[in-house]
Image (cartoon, rainbow, N blue to C red; front, side, top):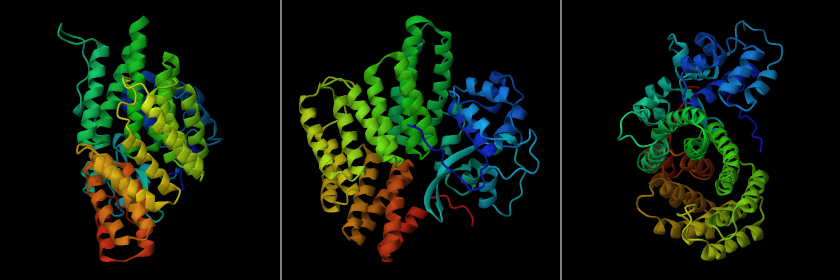
Length: 464
């Protein structure tokens, strides 16, 4: 599935797009400008100018960066689209980060160092087109008072010390990184993805380095673990609204799962790609990927149930209600016969399937049944699942609005805003943004004004 690059602003030229992708890949690999420059045998000052679109890389430089960053030819293909722009760009248009910084601080004329200029974080912004997730300079986000939104761009060493094999009590690399992954998943549940993602990125860089130096079974086990880190990074990136990073991590995980030959892992990641495609609005791709996940999953496994659920949701996005409802009925039947000891989908139960069904009913416009489904889901949800509660509340609020119960929609939406403020979850904020559009168009009641005011307090507001 090819994802069309999202246009962040109307002034982004091919040269700026190349620089933006270069910076994104560098950040995903947890590399500073100096570290990448050392690996690619380039001057770090030139590298900074490449990222800011102040200088065009040569073809050889683009190819070298593509190899070092593991971009699988993407950087080179984007470089070829730049065309006949000169090596030195005279009076270049504003870089994305610079332009947004000027937008936020029109009267502020501070000098920006190359390192600061590339230090951005994807945050939810109130724009004329609605709520959008865009990269904004971290210092601008911090200056706005939204400290929690800036966490994802803090230096990774502040979160986790690098692995060192020194000492007899130090666990082997595979055991160490497996334990770290479990801890980070628990930390995400408690503190949210913006706190955890920098550490994930750092550990991915360490894992890649160890795996490339390892041989035999050790290399295979490290690659399998690296694949699981990539999949987790994709999930967390999606939950902070960085769809580019989510897609890159998930695509890399899928590639690595084929290398390891772990077909169960491949089936799981195909399901994740189906979920990501659905959230991006790629309806046909979502159904196709879900079908591929089912074809790959072992029969009678929980992975098969998960794939069938993704298929059902894909049908609902295409407006195929009968096929969608049949899919959820099939998922419930398969769950009764599925292997209960599998490590995959241990969280899967009938309540989860009914909740997914409620989401599809809302997409199909059957808001009355969706409201009832979300009510049951909220009652069954364990207390510790704070972010999931926020997602369910936001979707339930949209269904309340769908049946015309504006005051209830605003009240439920307000509760979801509070959880969004705690977690920074893009899944919640995306739904609240859609609710915001609906409520603004239909009512100016006090409850609606309170909801909008609370939502605005957790959004970044570029100056117009």
